[in-house]
Length: 430
Image (cartoon, rainbow, N blue to C red; front, side):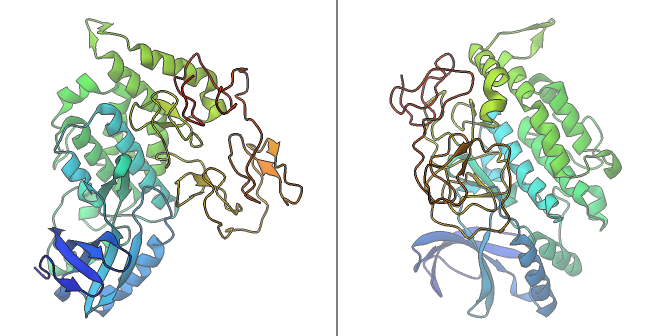
């Protein structure tokens, strides 16, 4: 053990050990300058040499491209008191620890989508993680999952291999033989999902069906089982090509999986019951889902919500930050809602100004209104924006839901009383 509790280490005060692996020790510490708790990963000294440091520099620069709400960013990587230290934001616990207690089915599906989204984003940037496992998935408040060790994992794997250490864990067979690919990450995701849904971790030789198959058939929609089976094919050519393809397939069946679970498994050819809430939400999605872009689910009640909604219209939960899928390329660091590359301000939360990542005037079919500020140089607005993304002027327009005439009595924005119990824009109940 390198450090002890209450030991001072540069600006950090060590509070305890979080864990250790073949490559590094991980500590919980207080940053006495910023006043926040962080996780310190300190590689074992005998594994750090000039070649490893060169690898780290290359991998950290690659990982810096991955700006995504489900990827844990490195706060700092540097030498402190002759020790190489990697600093991360401190989460609540790992997915591995969370899976030792009961998880509701809707939260399982939410975790699955978040981890698939993270790896899909990396694969889109041509980056293979190589060490996807529950210990590298860190949970933050509101069930936010962030995948850690992007880039770092590959260096650790190469270093441990050279030192004769390392275990199979959640590794794909071809990766264990030194031939990792995007499909290897898909296999690792399949192992994690199977363990999360069934409580059983498949092991070599990964014959189908794996342990837990009977439980899977009782609780999982057949389409979800087929997705997992494809991800766990021993022959990588039969798997999903990458996590992005797997994510697309998962989203296409997620609603069916929820409905299957809420209605209960078939007994003698009949369902054991019918969840009226699920039926109502399904009807809402069919009529308004595409229009309102309700592509995400509330962390509390699992009702369909849109990125721009600040309250869940089904249970009234406040949503100051967004979790889940975003169709935008980047996100606001304050509210985690999506942004376009040419916006200067967050239109959802009045976030601070940003440096546009492109000078091009990007078009978008979702623009359907104009800013009222005569000095604004773009004047383009999307439905339910609170502020203009170009000039930051508050939007005075009372947004309505196309095809509906009802309005919230408090804020005047569009409201659907046939479905909603709370206004998703101001949180008030009718």
